[in-house]
Amino acid sequence: MLETITTCPICSSTQFREWLQCTDHLVTQEQFAVQQCQQCQFLLTNPRPDPNSIINYYKSDSYVSHSNKSNSPVNFIYRLVRAHTLKQKLSLLNRYALHGNLLDYGCGTGHFIKHAQSRNWAVKGIEPDSEARQIAGGLVGLENVYQSLDGFTQNSFQAITLFHVLEHVHDLVDTLSLLVNLSTQQGVILIAVPNFRSHDALKYQSDWAAYDLPRHLYHFDSKSMLNLANKVGLKIVAQLPMHFDSYYVSLLSEKYRKSSIYPLRGFYSGFISNLKARRTKEYSSLIYVLQKK
Ligand SMILES: [Zn+2]
Image (cartoon, rainbow, N blue to C red; front, side, top):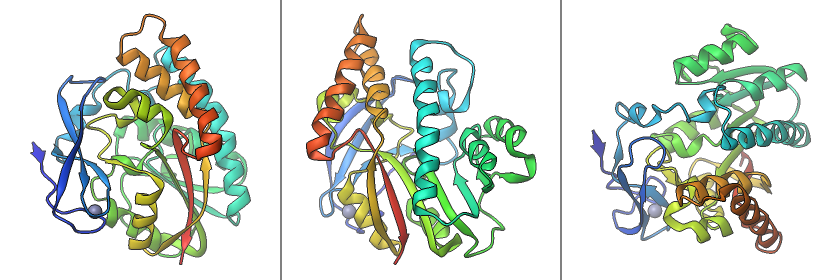
C-alpha cells in the first residue's frame, strides 16, 4: 500500500510542490514522485510505500548492501568503496568520539561494526532485514545484533552511526529522537546521506542513482539536515565529504541511462563532481557529525 505524507516531518507545513519524477530502476520499474515542502524546502518521496509494503522494493539480488554475492562491475566498485570508507568512518569516530560503546543503526551485513569491534569498540548493531542480520551476527556475535531499538538504555552510547540509513527510515523524527536519547551528552552521532545539491545529482536529475526511489524516503541537503538537527536537539559539529560515493553513484546513474561505456563515463563524472565540490562543498554524499545541544 502507498501512503501519502500530508505534513512535513520537519516544519509541519502542509504545502508541497512537485520536485521530480523517478523510476524505480532497481526492482519494480514503477514511477514515484519527489515533493518539496514549500516552507522549509525538505524533499520527500510522496506518496511512498508504507512500512509493511516497502520490503517488496528491496527484493533484488542486486540490492548490494544486503548481499555479498554478485561480481558485476557495479558491485566490484561498491566493495572497493566500502573497503576505503570503512577506514574513513573509523578514523572519524576516533577523531570525534570518546572510545566506548558504539551503536550502528542499520548495520546491514555488519562490516563496519566488525571493523570497529576489532579496534576495541563495544559494538551493537540494529538491522531490520533478517538475512543481513544473520550475517552481521555471524561477524560480531548474535547477541550484539538486534532487530529494533527496544530495550536499550538511555545515555549509553559514545557513538551512534547511521551510514546511508536515515533516508530509508519511515519514522524519521521519532527514530532520530530515540537515538538522541541513547547518546551520552558528549556522544557523537554520525549521519551519512546523499546530497541532492551535488554536481552528480544536478547532472543526472531523475536518473541520479542516489534518489533511489522508493527506497529513499527523504532527500537531504545541508540546510534540511540543520533543520532536522535543530528539531531533535542536535547541533552539527562538522560536515565532511565522502569522496568515493560520487564514483559509485555516477557509475550507476550512467547505467540507468543505458550508456554502453558506463564505467568510463561514470568515472569521469564522479571525478568532476568531486572537483567541483572542492569549491562548493556539495559532495555527492556528506557525513554530518552531530552532538547534543
Ligand atoms: Zn517543511
